[in-house]
Length: 65
Image (cartoon, rainbow, N blue to C red; front, side, top):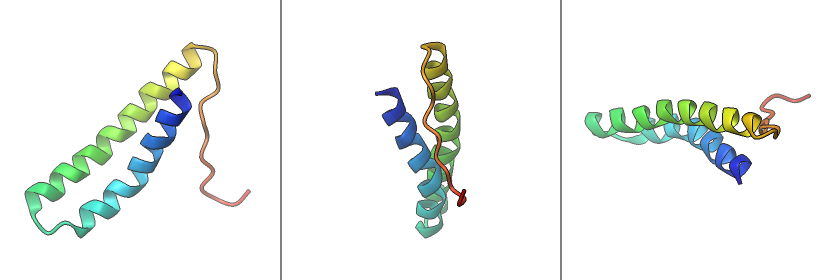
């Protein structure tokens, strides 16, 4: 379940900048950017919780390997 949460946070990290760039209202755009930044912190907290519980955090491979 925590890895699913981590996957969601990774998705938000990727998409919030795209969402923010499509928003015309500057205040709303700033809020979307702030949510993206907060998702980075959330992902770190979830990954640390997974490790503390003895699990292995999900790793998203972005580049070909």
